[in-house]
Image (cartoon, rainbow, N blue to C red; front, side, top):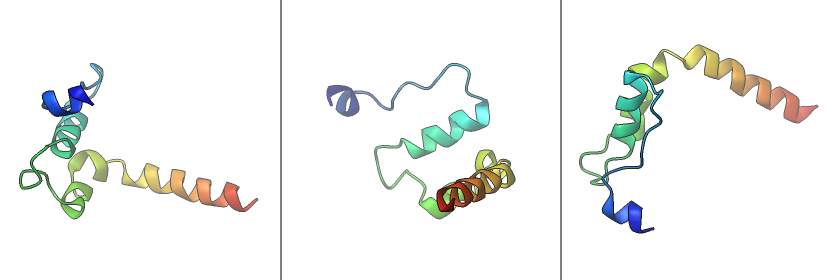
Length: 67
């Protein structure tokens, strides 16, 4: 709890790509006025470049839960 209050954001894994780091940093803004809303975050290049793969993963999860 102390680190959440004291640190600007949690440490990011060293092997994160630059686009992923940018996405996470935007998510971790403490000030809500500086943090993008969910709709804006969904349009982030890191997320949109992986959207097709994520859709396949989500559909697979739904399918296997029904089995």
